[in-house]
Image (cartoon, rainbow, N blue to C red; front, side, top):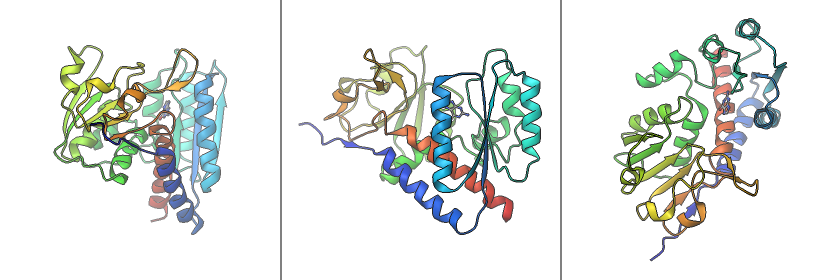
Length: 281
Ligand code: GUN
């Protein structure tokens, strides 16, 4: 018997969160987000545009710094220093990836940890591991938010994350652990991925590999969270998961687009508001 798979509507949940934040800001909160992007990267331009639009919608002032390709590590760090000391800026985001000649780690680490709304700096990653989180990176916390808003249990569940990046896989593993899940992280060197995911309750894929997970690989009723953003052979946006084959096999699934993606922006907005609230308290 096929399962009645429910689609997790990230666009809808993201709108609800943005609506909640808009109301909070309307009560008289001043919030500012600075976004730094360097060079010409089409994907980054789309992401930054979405962030700017979200800021506009909920009432956050956005300061977008679009720097030329030849900008140096030192010049970006100088700008970050100015923004660290600017009281109207509550959040600083450096859009990744940066051009190869820039030392990304040095630049990201120069952001004040209390303005690091991406949660990428070592102190914020360390705080998450030690169980006293400050800012948590937006995609992983957005995934937890989706699971909670759909009342999908995490406690004691077997969660398999495919992908070990510092932006998604690693912080997400900590968040799931904090929710009492049993967590396995798989990656490109994992032997026999199928063996790892076949009895998983929740599978999260963040690899950039099309059709990595198919309906016949998963346990009936598993929850599928697709973090991949890829283009198929016709140039259409798709995730890591073969969506069609999981319908009837999964209990819940996130679509691409409209699943995890919009949640990243919503949680970024939430982190900015949190930062601004801390400033006035
Ligand atoms: N590039 C792709 N995703 C992200 C993100 O969440 N934050 C930043 N800063 N850059 C990104």
